[in-house]
Image (tube, rainbow, N blue to C red; front, side, top):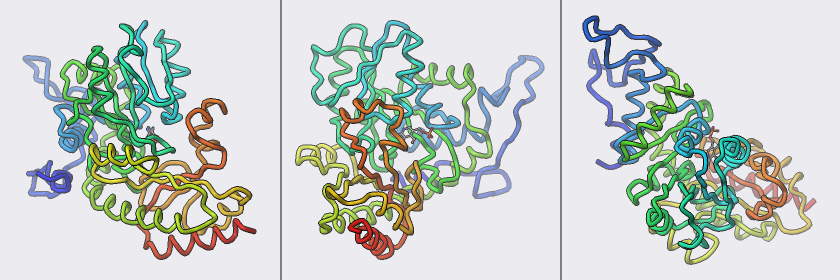
Length: 378
Ligand SMILES: Cc1ncc(COP(=O)(O)O)c(C=O)c1O
């Protein structure tokens, strides 16, 4: 089954012939009076509507197990809960700011050591120690859009019995399925492309490993950061149009890249595969499209504040993946938890702007960017 069909048809045959699933709001369920058990007992552990969403999440990733959380960070925290005192995790310096904050300020207090590296591509067998329990990957990276070779990192980690955890938020299973390549855990902020309308906070974890699935379920039960039934239903519905939305968002992204490159006011445009031929080849070998996020810097001497003020359509806001185009300044809006040195190390200058491209008519987006670039010249 192709992914657009899976997004629509994974769930079916509902009561009364309904073509969308019912919403079960129950927090508690009657148990069998002779066995004291039942398929569902209490919502934190499992709920029929969340279970249906989890089936869809697993199907999209080609996974055995799927889990829904109340946010991408709750999903990330659950995935990282497999680390214990004495373990080390290796992450790219450019990792999402919230993940950086969690690892730096929370995981460190649990006796887990984090090692941030400039480029995962530079890792060799000598860099992994017996304590190395996991390598965390985001490809493309946010907001630099640098590409990591998933196959190479997975092979390296597995030679040392370490796990590979991939944050696949920017790609979604529509464009990239890391579990197919051997990754151990995949997380997503479903707030972004899966929800797609900037009106829902949610997170997903998928895995093919039964022991890891048990650990993720334990995180649901033990810490309770699960997705509520109504939001689970809304996400089931939103997921049906993810492939369609991404098709349009990518079409707009390609057109904007072409256009921005013709404007002398734009110094550099970053997108998945833009950094080198090698990264373009790698990305094409592990993903089915460039996604819909790009970042860029204006030419020296231009006023980015004037540019931002002049823009009519893109909202000046964090987040990404919605149908409306958003623009943000990562240094102060998404990666402010990093030190200036760490940002510099990750290639995130104070002037870098990130665009999450929506589904608007491309002619309007281009016209708007053009007039804002004119305004930036003063
Ligand atoms: C790559 C990435 N991972 C994780 C998260 C966290 O997700 P949430 O905001 O849903 O908690 C974000 C949010 O911006 C993100 O961009």
